[in-house]
Length: 342
Image: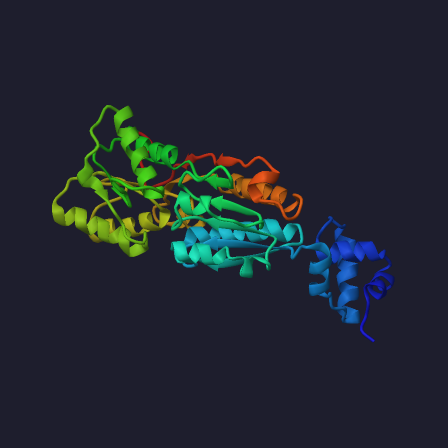
């Protein structure tokens, strides 16, 4: 006869409720108790009936993160950070890739797939605010993204304009006068446009003219795109003594392009990135970069999602609680790719 939860409780010397709390992660249990319960589970070969538990509790203890790309370092670090937070409360993270397309994002939100998850953190790139306004789902959803989205859904985003302003202002304050915006956009919406606005604002505050010839779109923001941007600048003969790269990945490519061109960092050209990825500190020289407040944004995202998960079942996500739009704090991590004084 298969082992029961009561068998596990007797073997571990705890109550059935304690066993349930360990296996479902609903309540925190002391580490010693948790280990005894899990040891008893292993010894007895007990298997939790997930289907029955889901039907009774209406929970899967699983959260989905939908990102544009698996192979982008920023999203990899975001997933790892969320997974650690969820694991601490006995939950799991599933990561899906949308391909940065409207269709991929909508597919990830179909009811047929959402029954697997207690909630979804969706990085919005392809969908427009109108698409989001038309969504009809009773599954908790928190949006991650840069566009202004309808108030109906909670949203967590970076302060792109202020972060870009900080990056560019630092370059100007430390002596650069011709700052290229690698990854920029002169029109449109989303991250690239907002960071370009911050680049412009820093020039205005410094009483300098921002040169549109130094705004370089950068494709998929890959390493090769950063290197290619430098090649284009050098080939065009456009003078530049600073680069604000819109991601740390682009900045890494920029450093390679500058080395290829025989330009020294920070002596000839200063460089600032954006994201403060773990690897940025280990580049040579170490990368000065904008820290977008990763921990604070992760905390906000899970706080907003958890309060939706706890709401009365069957209600529209935007009606049970007052939605929040939260912007994370930004700061500058000054390292070796910029000078400390002009």
